[in-house]
Length: 185
Image (tube, rainbow, N blue to C red; front, side):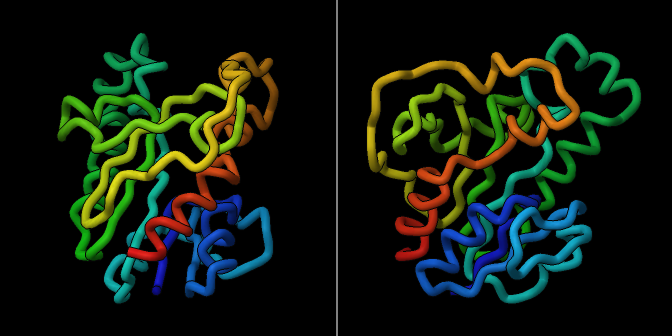
């Protein structure tokens, strides 16, 4: 299967698919954190390649409800509209199977409710971090390892230069579930 992992610099989801024998490439404006197939640039440059599956992680900065107090200012500058338009360009592209991942965000009211909301604790990580999935041609993920110790450590991170990067990382258990379940689709 040919897999595009959009807006991913970590290589976590890409590498989970590659480990199962798929041809996968990540794409982000940032360089990859892990060696492997990666296009550094705008994902829209790749959307017309014949991929079988896309797992997309569009930026949530201007969409996430955690920043709702800033929505008025973001709409005045067009930042929220631009972010929503980018999200929709991924959702409406001509790839047969698509998963778009984002936190609880305005896309639920601007477009439609997500097909599924998952938590890291459903996939072997004792964390809480609601992650919404909008799916096309894919089944919802089935939990693989429900664990206790459900703590909001991600949300309690102290300020730092790379806090945004640490908060946006895909948990390995979720990446592995995506590859195992959607790679078999």
